[in-house]
View (tube, rainbow, N blue to C red):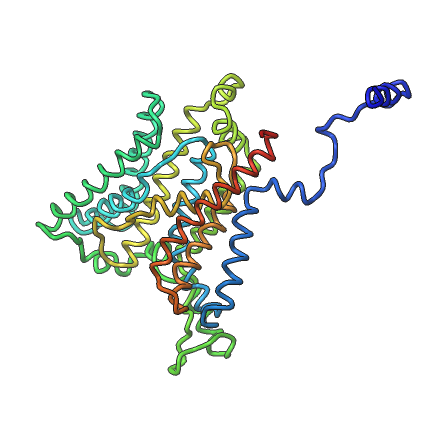
Length: 377
């Protein structure tokens, strides 16, 4: 009675109850609701761990670029996978898509004799077709995207193996790509290191470390890192500043309600499947050009690493919540651990334990954040 009476006294005193939507929240509360929090915490933990256990060379300029290179390859896939997860779907075929797109690109250059720009165009066109097919199967049949893309994982991997043998007359590796594209003006945008002359200038002026012959230990910024940064920036802008970004969150949060509100859910999810496939195609082109060859095992298990990186970055398995910056941080954690173990005396097989452990921790953490945000119990 006293509580009820107190409430009535407040009302009779002429005070108006405040709308909870207008109440100010503390910066701690706002921080706890950010999807990147788990990944940022994990990055701090991993950095501190290697600061005490790894050779100090790991955190030199060359060491940092060394682990950011594989992180970028996983990260480009994680950006696409993360956007798709925010939209409420999965794509387990991205790793196999890397292998198949690598075959298409390599065969276009070596077997068909296409110039680099034409081979790139054909590779992305193939990715668009596969991404669109993926989406239509999921949307028209109502089957879970997990099952549809799991099937495509095996189909594309098998086609990559059969295709490489066809293109080479029986070999499981398609070579000669580097020689065919040497000197192409488009090559510096897709392979090698950027700003090499700047790094050489810094080495000549003793700003960065060099080898005894004067060559800089860090020869430039890996081109995949620049692509990774650019895609992260674009994806973040799309999610936070555009109507399409709002549609992505709405489609993943409640597709039926979004459709009733006028959101073109089917079109949004189709675009997201295509974007994910194109991210895989970009990784395929970059890695094939760097290696100068391609094989059916390219991108093996990258689908799991990309999804784990996105989950570590705050993307909920239930959709409707996530962040491109979180996927970026999750991918950096991957690269740091993958390469960082080589700077320690720790058995590198612990990397697999790390993958499972980080996934489990991230899911538990994200589930707690989801309940805090939605008010569920």
